[in-house]
Length: 364
Image 1 (spheres, rainbow, N blue to C red):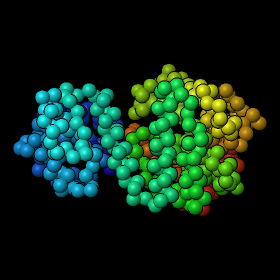
Image 2: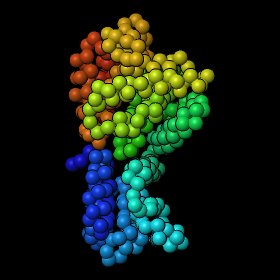
Image 3: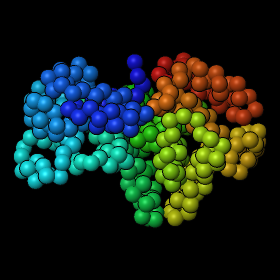
Image 4: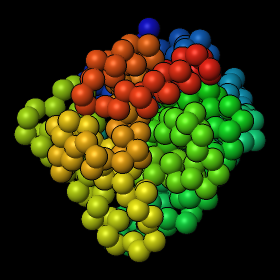
């Protein structure tokens, strides 16, 4: 079974189907179907997280296909995108066939299509959060919203809304305190914004680690907020490097490492970021033996927050699901961290291991 997010494409154009598959298959588990009847049955059986429909699908056409799919699936209908010619646009806008589906004009702009599919997948995932218990729903709805606001602020050179970020993390602190985080980890795994998913997971695990060593209240809120903000500088890294489906080259890794410096630049535009949050964000790639980056800090120059952030960031990266790798089992990730005897704080790692694998039995 693929670890990629499933999407389906229905088209009568074999050439377009092959081209779309070649573009999207790196990131998604793509099924291309040319028969409308089989495609409708496939939607019920496969349950893709997004659906792309070409206007040229026999015998009923793309708009009618979407109408029938919506009638059959009802509330279970996934976010959809109709591909149409420019001549069809006025007609499409005047009909009710599309329902909540979006449309895109051919010829296809592939970068735009990738963005729209990501938005469609995320829309479906975020809609599913409505079924979660109140605390978990609040964590996800509030953090994903403020995370997008942060990126908007950064793009416009404005200060990031630190107070709102911290407020969005209060339900997360409650979820950690009440041992309700397993549902959060499961609910976010299909979301297509990897930077958000990784940042939320770091916020969760950092809060769990803090909770396990007795940190409480507003101090726990600092941990969760720092985790959510720790990778904001990645918005300045080229998409081709940030989401490359495989190992980075040496030159690409040099560029990737600059995300910490970008985060510092972002923080410099904001006056009310606590020193503790800055330590988490700016030192989470430092190592106890001085081999980390960006400053090669070591030993006593790394306080407890920095050491916690390093452990949690590595653990989350290993256990994250990516398009090019399945999530690593928790036990294996912990074993790798245990082998890094002079790089990470083994005492703090012991607390994480005990809490994750023994006390809570959390998944990766």
